[in-house]
Image (cartoon, rainbow, N blue to C red; front, side):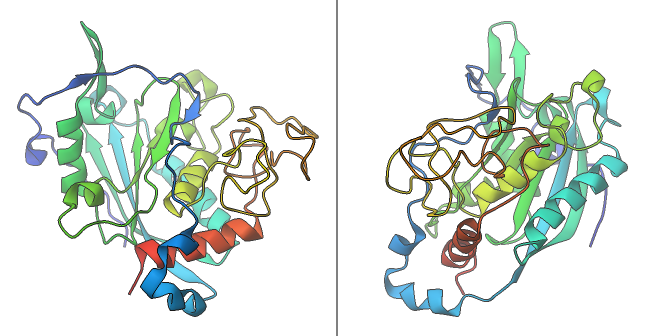
Length: 298
């Protein structure tokens, strides 16, 4: 089901003054998912449910809800054509690996604070309105823990492209973790925006949404663990990589003493959109295991 409508800020009860905190802008370009404290090997999570690993299907379907948030000045910024192009990129990237993404809903919000991803520059510097953000997610997140919610903001934190929550075990009384389970992205990473409009030089073909959704399925960055001889990203067939690599430097090998070249074509690195095109079989296996180990457990 696909729908499009406006959500007024007042209906989200965000118009009153809410606590806020000062924010330091990110120092790393691109995805803001931390490489610390990531989801461990999903095999460690199975305990009493370990037998479920033998019952994982060959393919599965996931409902996707797209949320478009724009400032008033950018109310017409994210066009339907751009959304359609982004959806095709996202859907096709996962369909190759027997993950069928189904568009369940599309909705729009036009509001200055929301469209700015709740980070605005005030007299004292950059301010993050966390309570307002929580209220927005609580009012708009759709579906269960196995439903993907993607939020695109017309004005995002400067220098950042996106962020996404890893799957985790949620306690019965932990509604906060549930409502924040989503991926948040700069709309300027979507296909169709031009450099003159502010699109990222390296990431404007829609692959950041693929990257962030990979995190939602439990994939880590390919460079996690550096040149360790263990599988830092918990995937055995992604070659070790010392640190993030930008651009599209063919033939780079930042871990020359370990097998394989840097996986510059992998969606879970930081190379340019015209460079990334693949997940490995091991990453596919991890996405399946993680999804049925954390997100769809019954």
